[in-house]
Length: 114
Length: 112
Image 1 (tube, helix red, strand yellow):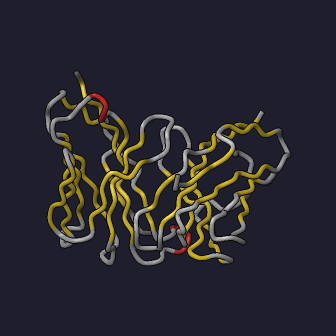
Image 2: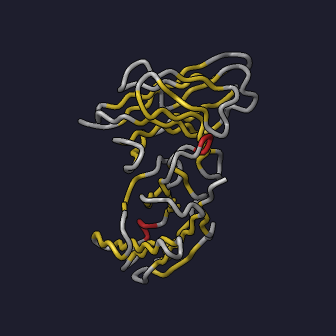
């Protein structure tokens, strides 16, 4: 069974701080990595995709990928109360049978305190 | 507007009744997915389809059925065999099996 592991949190940071969200995955053949944000009662929204080792920046968000360590992270700079949500890590690898090819972690709940 | 449309937003089912959740996309995506989410839990895969006229069971397919007769449509039927169907159902699609998936707004199903 392929796994995507995230700390469930809650992760609490003060407004203006950097929030750091981490994700590890078990399938070494994985090639595509995604971060989603899910507000309570809403559907997940894609915020970042990353496909190669290193950093990828988009506004206040930076995704970091280290395939050798099987580790993906998301940094949120200048955190705002509106960033309070659950963040889902998803990993796309080889066909996983009943798991499908896109495997989600259970998510980390982030709380940004004003 | 391009996107994924799920309907209805809220659905109530009586015991022993089959219900069908609609999912339509106009993004020309090949792959489509159905997930179930229970309160405070992660996403669990029910069924997925990587191409029209083909679909595979996910981890929790029992009590559910799907069809993929058209590229843009992937309806999910919750049958009476599904004993605990109350949940938030999410449909997603992606261009292909390697690219990011986008979600519809979800259908909240409640057994009454």
